[in-house]
Image (cartoon, rainbow, N blue to C red; front, side, top):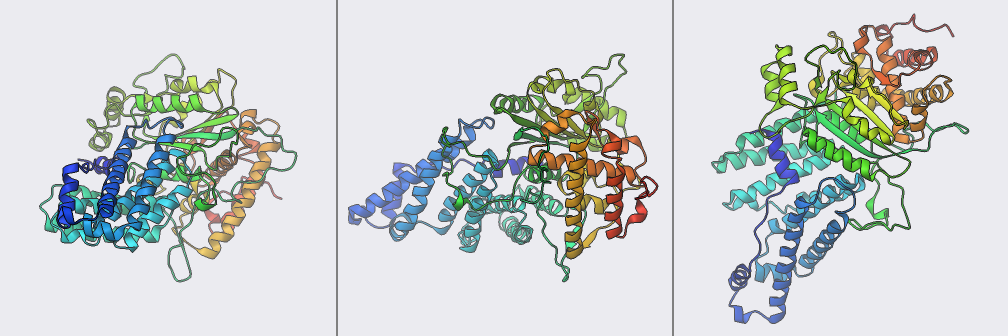
Length: 602
C-alpha cells in the first residue's frame, strides 16, 4: 500500500468513532459508584456531556458526506458543527471535576476533542482558503502538545489509542508546514519518530511500513528547497513566500489595466515521483502559497467560523478560493472545473494550475486542432493503477510509456478547457508537454492567458524534478530559483534581503514594461489589475529573461512560452531588464554564468 492513501485517510477521513449508547452511559455512571448514590445534578451533567459528545461526533462524521466542490451548501453545516464543539469544549472545562469522578474522563479524551476542533479549523481553511484559520488549528494542536493530553496513551494496552496519537502528529505537521513553522515541524518529526518506534516495538502491527513512509515523505518535503538562507550563526532562516503588503508591484497612477480579480483557483498535481506529503506535492504547495496572503489574527475578523456572510454586506475575500486536487481522474477534475466555473462571480478570474506529466500524441496528424498535440496526465483509477510504478518500470522506454499513458490514463487536452474560456481564464501549465497549450484559440473573446513552462531543462543543470519544478519555483520564490540556476546552495540573510529588495525593483520595472508596451496583447493587461496575477506575470517574465540570458539554457525548449505571445523585444529580451539581471548577478558574484553581449551599453 502507498503512503499517500494512508495519509488521505488520517488527515481527511478520520475513522468513525462509536456512539455513546444509553447502555454505555449506565456502565460509565455505575463505575463511578452506586447509581442511586449519584446526585441528580451530577447525573444530568454526565448525561448532557454524553449528548454533546455524541452530537459532535455525528456532525463531524457528516463532514465527509458534504460535496468537496461548491462554496455555499456546506457553510451552515460547518456552523452547526462549530457551535456544538464550542459548547462541548466549554462544558468539559466547567464540569471537569464531576466528569472526572462520575464519567471517568481521561486526558486523551480531552485531547481528542481539541484535535477535532483543530481539524475543523483546518478543513475550514481548505474550504475558504483563509490562512487565519490555519493559525486557529495550530493553536489547538499546540495546546494538545503543551498540555500533554496524549501523554498517558502509551501506558494503556490499546494500539488504537496510540494510532490516534500518531494521526494527531501527522495532522499537526501538515498545519505547521502550511504555516512555514519548520522548527516546530522538525521537533514534531522527531517526536513522531520516537512514537512510531515505541508503537511498533510494543504492538505487532501491520502498518509499520506505512508510518515509516510518512516519516520519509515529510523529511523529503522539508529538504525540497534547493537553497538555504542562513543567519550569522548558521541557523536556517525560514522565509515565507505568501503575498505580503509590499509583495506585488504597485500600479502607477494612470495605468490602464483591467478590473478583474482572481476569485477561484484549481491547483492540480499529477507529476510522477515528485515529493509530496498528505496529498500535497511540492509544486502544489508552492503554488498554494503564491496565491495566499500572510495570515492575519482571526480575533480581528468579525465573521464567526461557519457562519455565512450577509448578502447585503459583501466583504473582500483576502485570498482566492482554491481547490487542491492530487492526481485526480479526468471526471473529478472536470467536475471541480464545472463547479468553479458555475460559481465564478462577475468580473472575476478562474485560474487553473497544472503540474503534471506530459502525454504526447501517439501518431502524426495532418490537422492542428486542440486535441492533436497531446496534453497532461490525469488518472483513470488512482486506487487500482499507480502511475508512479508504471513510470519507474518504464523510464528507459519512453515510447512504451507514452502508449501506456495514452491507453491507460486519460489526459487533459487544451480542447477540454475550451468550454471554460467563456469567462476570464488564467492557465499555468508546468509539464514536459506544456507547449500543447499554446495552440489555444480564443473562441469567445474573453481574457485568456496561458503561462507555459519549459519542456526540458539543460542536462548540465542538476536534476531537481523530484524536489519540484524549476518553473514553479520561479513563480513561487524567484530569488531562490535565480540562486539555484546560478549554482548557489546557501545565502547569508543580509545578502538575501538586499537581493530581495533589488528584485522588488526589477518587478516594478517589469510592470512598467508591460503597461507601457504598444504591442502587448490586451489580455495581459486585463489580468494586471489583480495583485496575485500581476505578481505571477512579472515573475514569469523575470524567469523567461533569466533563462534566455543564462549560458546553459540554449535550446528553444529550455524557455518558457505563453499564449498569447509576449512581444520579446519589449519584455523578456528588453535591454533594460537584461541590465537588471546582470546587476543582480553581480551582487551575487555569479555574473560569469550569464551572457553579457545581449544588452546595449547604457
